[in-house]
Structure formats: structure tokens, C-alpha cells
Length: 295
Image (tube, rainbow, N blue to C red):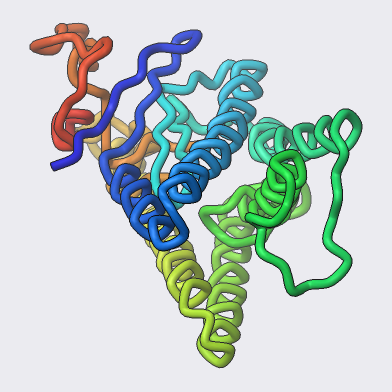
């Protein structure tokens, strides 16, 4: 029914809106119809404004990556947020830290601009609806929440990668990944348990997804580590065997902002051997399965 939309190319970065995002839009529209068509349209407008901030957040990752010669292949907006796919893993903890923190800093900058140039009227009590607030106040709160939420030290949030980068200044990368992954699992279980006992099932869903994201991150790292050890051993034994001692940098479950995930180059772009794909996507609406070729 819905299609994944290719919006175009921004400074070498391909921009997509995933097909599942339109289901979220439809849900917001239908939910708001009970209060009138005008309120329903206003709710959709608010949703687009929120994801505009999410998009700028991802651009923060993308453009900071260029400082360290880490290209961004594309940015995809999904119902759960945005995903910036980097072309390679940042070289060293300093680069990883800067790239990870620049996303939340964009939201802090937006909130600061709104606070300085618009009248922000925060509610005095906790019992309020965000629809009752002025648009600048709404977006101020959205960006504050985006910055705070993304700083949680749980994969795949930026806070998990920031913590991992900081730990690498004192321990090995392997230890940093393991410690951050385990901490993320514990925190995800605690927040999911809190949501369960307070009947906030959206929290249960969100942090259950994060728990599995932490588990996948650990599994991916362990798998890549073992494959690299096998490659090194075979390379040493055969002086360059079938694996050639190469790096297995992009594991089969790679999907974070700093790794090339399981969904690879979009149709219409050149493949790894330089051969062009069958057709260009510029300005087209394509099926989700056509957006990326599984490697």
C-alpha cells in the first residue's frame, strides 16, 4: 500500500522516508479525527515537525563524520527515529565520541535557539497536554526530550556509543563494547519493568527493542571477533588463505549509525565492483525491498 520515498541527495547523502513511516502518519491522522479534521491535520503537522528535528539530528552525525573522513551513505527516517548509515567505522574513540555526541548537540542547539528567540511558556504543573502549548514551546520540549533520551547509555542510542567511546580511553575496545552492552541490557530491563508495573506499555515496547538491540550488538561483536581470529589464523597458516586475514568490519547484524547494516546500497547506485544498478531512483517512489540490496 505505502511506498518508501527517496527524497533526493543532500551533499552526497541519500535521503529516504521508510514505508512504515506512512503507517504512523495514518495512525496520527485517524486518532486526531475524533477532535475534528483541523486537529487531525495539526497532529500530522506536529509529527512532521518532530521528524524534521530528528532529520537534523542525523545530519549532525553525518556532517561531523566528515571531519574524520567517515562518509555517510544515507539517512532513513523510520517511525522509531532516524538512521544514518556510515560508510566505515570511526577510527578511534575520539572520532566515535564526536560523531555520536553531535546528534544530541543539534537538538540542544535547536532548543536553545527556540528559547532565545521565541516566547517559551512552560506549564507550571505536570498535568498538561502538549497540544495546549504554543508551537515554539512544543518544539522546545521535543528537542530537550530528544537530547535527553538519546543520551541514555543503551544501544542503539547515542549515549551507548558515547559511553563506549569514553571507556576506550581506559580499557580495550572489546572490554568497552562488552561493558556498554551489558549495562544497556540491565538498564533496558529496568525501564521495561518500570513501564510494566506502571502500565506504560509504550515504555515496555521501546525498552524491549533496546534490550534486543544491545543483545544483537554483543552478538555481532563476538561473531566478528571470532571470524577475525579465524581469518588471522588461516592467513598465518596458509600465508593468505581464502580469508586473506581481512577485516570483517560489517557483520551480518550491523545496523548502528557507525556501521554498514544489513540493508546495503540503494538501487541505481554503483555496486562494490563499480557496475551501475538497473535504474536511477532520483525522485522516484519505490518499494521497500527495492530501496536497498541485501549484501
